[in-house]
Image (cartoon, rainbow, N blue to C red):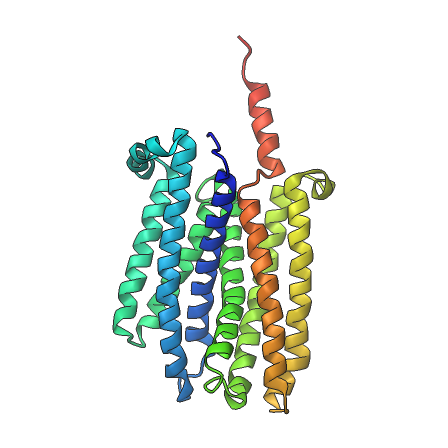
Length: 312
């Protein structure tokens, strides 16, 4: 593959937008299915806002995924002019092309399911969002070992858990800013404990998947410091640790205040949520860079294959 000028930066940007839109969709339907109380009159207002956000997220995901595969066609062909001729063969013959068509199909079905706005479709939409989260793993380094490996399954669990947690944070921060009247202190007192429980479960499964992926990707502890992939992963883990501490602060100090309807607790919760959102955006940005960086285990495997080839 030939990397054109700035092509790697465009690929990372496209991957970051794909991560952002997919994570937001996962968190959005996680809130709609598991967090928001259906008996409250504020919930339909918030769900209408979320439906519009979901439509925007689907369109952004489709655009970012198309830009990603178009840039890969440019890199494979060596020029922008020959990329168009390579686009259809790329879709028909490559794993990346098949995944693009599958992702586009999921987005189209998800968009069509949101036209009617029926409540019973939320479960179907949640399943579609989970499948979109799985697509992130199918285009990651975990897919190098095949579509049915334990590494891929653990990466899917990792991606879906991260989406429900981080995406939920993004959507809550968005609604707190856009619908402050609907997200009243009384409504938050009923909603936030549910989200906190979902976030805690997601954090546990996310850490299990992340630990396994780290164990598979890095051959030794020294790889954290001696390889580009390891150094990026170390930075990601540090930011993730700060994000987890912020989440713990919210869960054990601020959420009890919100449940007791203490004065200023809602504003304090919104302040900490915004901090978590910025940290989450950084984590996704580093993840996008990691997706375009060769992990040490792949490099070692590649060198072993070359050394095992018979000399002429």
